[in-house]
Image (cartoon, rainbow, N blue to C red):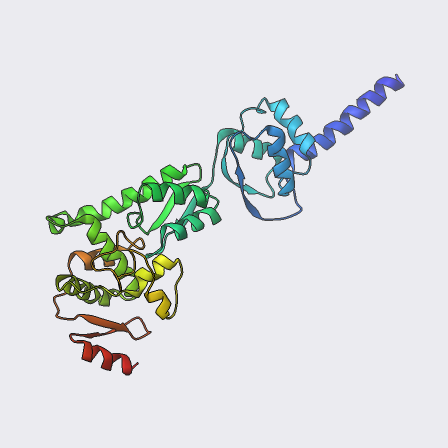
Length: 308
């Protein structure tokens, strides 16, 4: 009788502690964490990750619960939003159903492929290296539209790129009439330079006119931002050595447009490249406040620079 009583007592105590684990979340921290479950991770590896992140208290009990619920091999990869107060049972059901997090992010106008890749990696959406590799292979600089995006975290890197490309196509389709007879690639190259040169929308069509006027007269564009793209960094002032850089993106040395866009331009810059202002300006210099001084002659340009 005593033996049966001890067994019964053990079962009750065991059930009590298992219930605490199954139905009470980890109260050590009261935060929401974003956890990435990589493909092909074993249930043991997932349990270890959740323990390390403070989501669960015991790996072994988590594995036991997986076996009891029959979901040991049904956990799905993805990026999950897990709450500290969630019970292990809730977490298991979430992972088994593939209820991945919905992630929102904004790509600022003028971001390069590299900057977009780094932003997405920080959001744990993909590897920056993978994004850069695919985007460069497909020559997508300039064609990934900067905007606010909200996507399931389970979307692949190819899927993310496709979404951005579709957004670009959606925007550019609104200008089909004005684009007739024009090279879309050249428009995007010009728009990318305008994006980097002009900080205010009001100045973009005038900056565009300067670029077009110089191209018509077969003058080098002499755009500092194209050299910065080749250097891979922004500089407050380019050195004489920078101006001599041997690169197809050095528009001080090379006539015509650079071989490709230098960033991903926004709608205002695309509009400016498609419909530039009508001026005779050939030069501009930044005032440092987002506006420019425009000139028709080199002498006027030098005077404008002296006044800064």
